[in-house]
Amino acid sequence: MTVMEDGGDPMGAALRVRDACTVGLEGSPNGQWWLDSIGNVLNGASFERVGSRQLAGLLIAVWARRNLKQYIGDIDSAAVPCGFGRAIGNKGAVGLRMRIYDRNICFVNCHFAAHMEAVDRRNEDFEHVFRTMTFNSLSSGLLAAAGCTSVQLNRAANATNNRKPELSEADMVVFLGDFNYRLHDVSYEEAMELISRRRFDRLREKDQLRAEMKAGRVFQGLREAQIDFPPTYKFERNQAGLSGYDSSDKKRIPAWCDRILYRDNQSVSGAQCSLECPVVSSISMYKACIDVNDSDHKPVKSVFSVDIAHTNEITRRQEFGKIISSNKKVRSSFEELQVIPESAVSISNIILQNQDISIIRITNKSMTSTAGFEIMCEDLSTAIEDERVLKSRERGSTGFPNWLKVAPAIGIIYPEQTVEVSVQHVDPQSRQLYDRVSWNRWSEGTPEKIATLILQITGCYSTETKSYRVNVRHRSSRSMAHTSKSTSWNGSPWSESLI
Image (cartoon, rainbow, N blue to C red; front, side, top):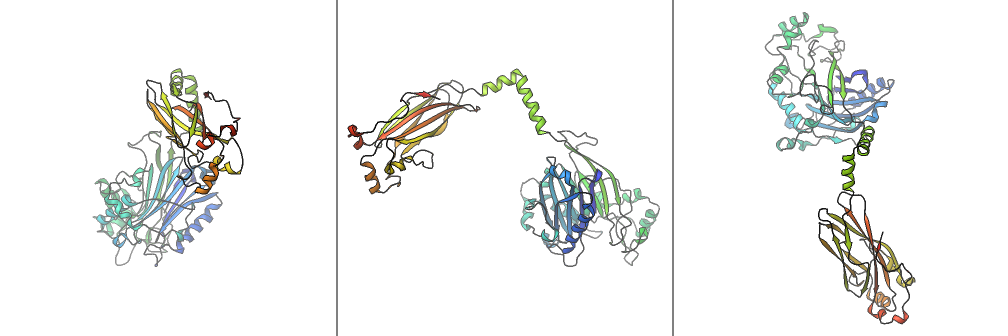
């Protein structure tokens, strides 16, 4: 079964790969063979496979022209088993989700419960797939069929919680595969007679799927192009044309088991593609491949034409810039947002002794605007540079020198409010930066420790800042007692400075 976009640009294939060993959750070499075979055929047309997923005998894959691949991304895959105990993959679904021009589009290949009387079971299979299909990113962008075998069996729990189904959030969803819905209230002979007369309109009235969809019991919100081709099941292998319908003793009534249903963003028929309705699709061809005779099913193919509304980000930014530059009201609003509240800082020079605490008071003088502040350390220096004082230049995890504690270093100030920031020399012993011996050595003749704090004030919505400089010195009481031996500081003048 295949599904394509008009012009053959993106193309998808969904198949049921028959293999006696693929009844659990494992893939099969047959799946890889199909991927390779289709890829070889499309290679001359410059197609590249962008994703695939297999669950037992179910396989789905998508190819795209190389010149379109740059617009396709975020390719995710999913698999939901619907067999015995919702754990076996002989029935179930595989899906691919991808972003095309920033719109999410999903393709889901399904194989539901068989037999005429299993209508309710088929409806339940769809509900289980729709509610529990959870997509996972393809780690390599491509998953080979034989390697795509893992399934999270606990996904069924999703059906009982309040989480919105992922398929419901897609802009477009295409369901395709062997849904196994049959024709009811019609005999084998009546069906064959209507097929021979190509009275498909009469047969459509007997279609289980149409009846269930009309009653709102399955595939809610999806639609299908009109069926104008013969039923696709059940055929005898290697018999050409319509003469191949089942003629065994069972004489299974022909049915349209193989279908393609879809949903886009249209809430009403005929809606135009727009940013409010970004994905609008139509079908220009929906038919069965009657000449294919190596299966008891006939493949179904469809050609979609999909319009996708896409925002050109470069153009959008350019137009936004024009509005800002030309509209006085907008420009005035932006200028107001850049305003930095008037502020004041209580001190510009701090001298610390031992573990004394000094306070910096930051006042927001504005009556209406909230201000933000951040304090950083611009420079670390000492009056004398030698091996004993190198550690005073080391910064801690806060960005301040190891000997200096500033708290809080960042915050907000409400209108007409003041924030107090404490500045304190930290005993290296209490911070376990030095052992007692090294601290005693440091205390003997230790020169001044010097740091420059940069205090930045900004508005809540502004990228502009106003900066103040606060100079900090520390001298121990022992070194203060030996002022005659102190070393002069050649730093910048000690006056309040505004950067």
